[in-house]
Image 1: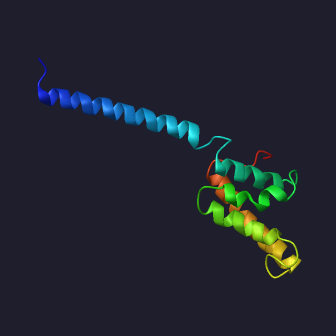
Image 2: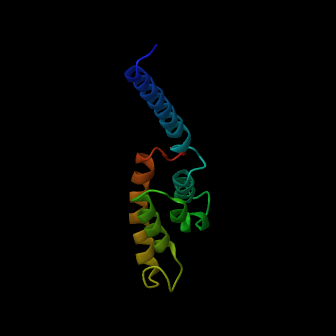
Length: 120
């Protein structure tokens, strides 16, 4: 017959194995999936950056992102791309410069998070 201590140790081992298995499954399916918010946000950004997807998706990409500073940097790109009367007071040149400055930060964010430009 097994001692209570041995039963507890086996139970803890089983729980640990289940927890490790769940963590591995979550890490491999959630983080880099094309359906995640960060992946969708970075794809919208790369399409805009490569001039293949227009500006509409990148204007709202920050709403899909799930991590900081990606959310903030995409928001800044969005602000810089706004039409007259919005963004930085309607100054198109300042808006464009602001968007490009923020875009370099988004490039770093997306590449660092494992979503590099598919064109490169």
